[in-house]
Length: 271
Image (tube, rainbow, N blue to C red; front, side):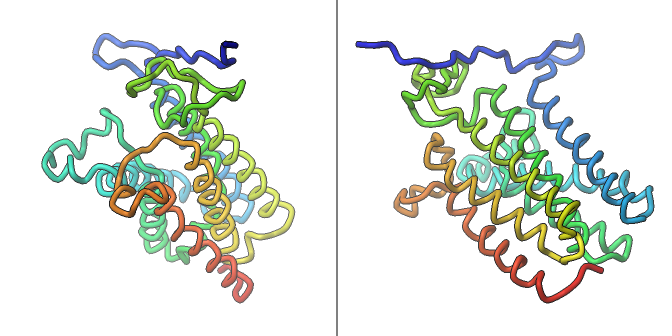
């Protein structure tokens, strides 16, 4: 029998070690931090182009970081592993052990923008539109972090671009699988490009809610379809008959909300 072509992925999740840090510095943490640096650059560029106060960006970045991390962690706790954390609440803050959910991160970002908007007396949708643009490229960076962690892997595959995730926490790590993380990262980069064109070339920044709506539609539609080739992440999917994964069920309301904002954006202008 012909041997299947695949890429053997042996990358060590730890980038380098420090004497005072037992776990070392992981590639995931570096890429997670990179996501915020990239977001800062593009958000700062947009706000400066629109003549907004330069001091806003430093404060907004702090809100975004806290909202993303807290939201992502609580999303994982409540959406994917509540049975465990309900019995071990002391483990909820232990984000260094892994467990962040993108749907929770989205909710956290929305709340962060709402709080910051109240502080600077600006409509929340103004910040959500601009955060949506940078969130796409940040999400791609985080998915690359998942790749280095050998997590969020795909289902078995005989495609020549399949990966053997040698350090994956599964019963059969040597089976070639879809690199689901790369599929998502690639989709998110395309979405980032589309949103940039809409903002800089099509003037969608003046259509209140349009960028947010398009972001939600494109990103969570991509997430919905990639889930078909992704290894189960658990959650409540089994209680709903297993027809769709937890990630797919959670993506549907975000897609519908996106269509609402896109529809409503034609009826009002940005403040």
